Length: 121
Image (cartoon, rainbow, N blue to C red; front, side):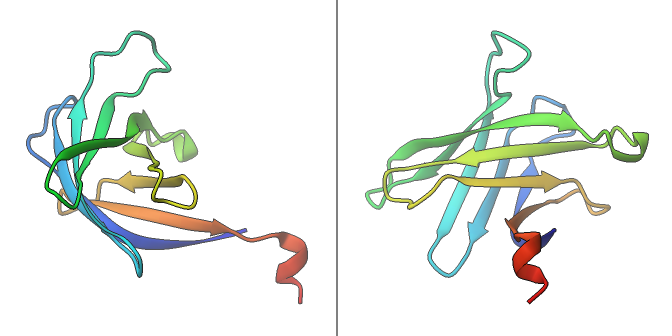
């Protein structure tokens, strides 16, 4: 069981599958401006994008990777982005997903996994 929360949005700069995305993740402790830049893939399992943000001094810093994938549920084949964000300043890796909505934005969803045994209490 899990609960999903929207913690930000991504906006593509075009409709091309290898486009850049710009967006933001905002939580109680994070306010990250994001840029996803397409990468040259060396294998099918390699990321499709590198995730960048800005340091406090304004420098671009690579903070993760993203994979453009397609949903298998209900045979929709709809595209989504799986993002893994990590930095020494974070206590844990942030794994999130972004799904294209009807407006063309890509809401970033985070979910906390809930132990089924603890949800019975």
